[in-house]
Image (cartoon, rainbow, N blue to C red; front, side, top):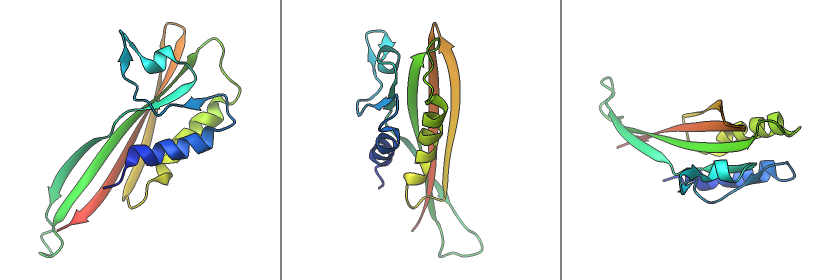
Length: 135
C-alpha cells in the first residue's frame, strides 16, 4: 500500500523550502487544549490517513470485480491573520499541487478551506485519493 503521508510530506517539504513556511513531520495532535498548528504558526502539519475500502462488482465482466480504496488526509497551515506573508498564496498553491505526487491513483483531489480563530488564519487542506484494485 502507498504511504500517502510520507509522499505528501516529502513533496511539500521540497516545494516549500525557501518559503516563509516550514513543514513538520509531527502529527497535528493537541498540546493541552490547543492543536499544534495553532501553537506553532507558519508550520504545515499533516495528519494520519483515513482509509476506507469498498467492493465493486462489474456485472458485464465477471473477471473484473475488485475494490476501491479511498484515502483522506488533512493538512493544516496557520498564521497570524494580521501579518500575512507575501508568499502565502504561492505556498498554498504549492501545497495543493502536492496531490500530483501520489502514484497509481485514479483520482486525486484536494479541497482547501479557511477560517479565522482569534487572530489566527487557518488553512485546512483535505487530500482525497482513490485507487482501484481487482481480485
